[in-house]
Length: 260
Image 1: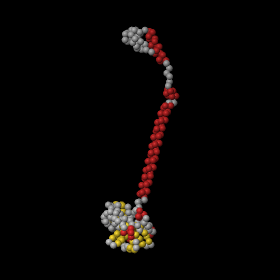
Image 2: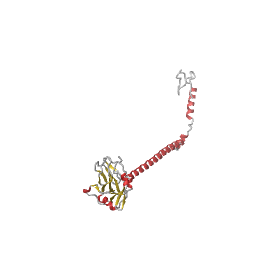
Image 3: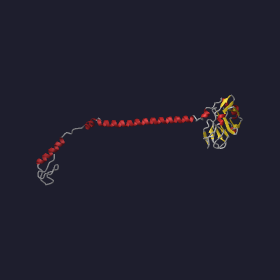
């Protein structure tokens, strides 16, 4: 409660004996009123609030609990979402690796070669090539055309490993080749590297190589390894084995057209 000067009405300062405005002395009665007001303010008990109660008892205020719970829920939700994302990404990476490994382990196969007959293991090359046999050159053999079949002896393919022969009809001549792939598949194809027009090849290790441009393909499936003509390997032609002979349909060869 404020105390005022009885002469000019100015608010009196605490414990003042004279008015700071007019200099009038402060009466004892005014001092007593002012002191009583101060004592009353000091003696009024302070009503504790809920926050004080929880502070004094060491307990946590409900609002604090709710705030902490919300933060915890947000953290857990974010953590759970992050873990789920990691699991999905990890699974995707594993699937991708498996697919790549499968593709690597199973080399792509020409569809015609895949349908070719597999020869007995006795036809496979059992001994490694010596230094003098670092490459296997084509050996020319004679083919017979009878009815609708072009025929060459299977034993000549086994003996020479890589043979060349021709189909001739009137003015048309088509060069052909035959060899036994590393897995035992009999491969017959048009003996032509179309971009460079070479008809001669040789075998080097597990590859077939054009003698002119040196483009290299895999013996197993004629997939390109290196060289400018890689997209145009000797074009596989279906064939069969009948007894001791390799047979090719005349129609498949007579109707063949260059790809470039």
